[in-house]
Length: 143
Image (cartoon, rainbow, N blue to C red; front, side, top):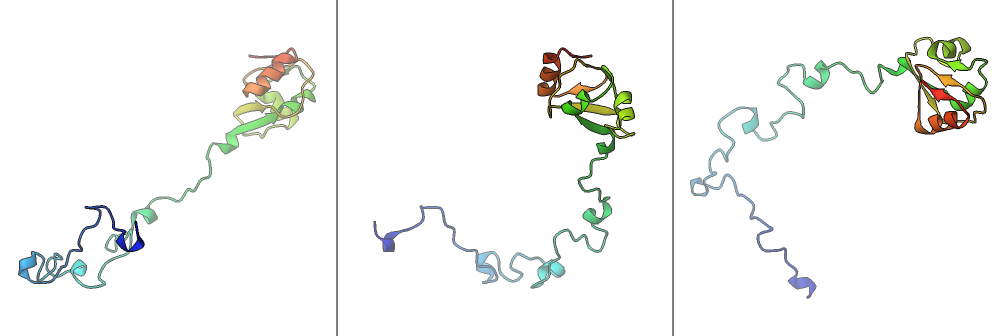
């Protein structure tokens, strides 16, 4: 094989369509653009998303971004913080009173961060797999 013999595979390339080269080509006169109008003229096209002056879809829809509306109602508590609580039975109310979660919190999850040595019972509070194992290893339970 030599550099001057390299060619694309057969059928991989198509000959360019030559528009506006007479009626015999099938694309003479208007060159497949139809008659009149913005799309028939050279350089006459609109930008992406343009709807003819109507308020475009991307401007009609409300801009909410990626801010989760559920965020203020969810909270996470570290396993080490539960160790410092004076109560043995932990629920959302006791966590709010201790100041570990915000007042708006509706669902609380315990994550595996820190150590736990005392026996606690979780009620109405979920826990990650690792946190659950650590609580049960310390003699606690999750109701």
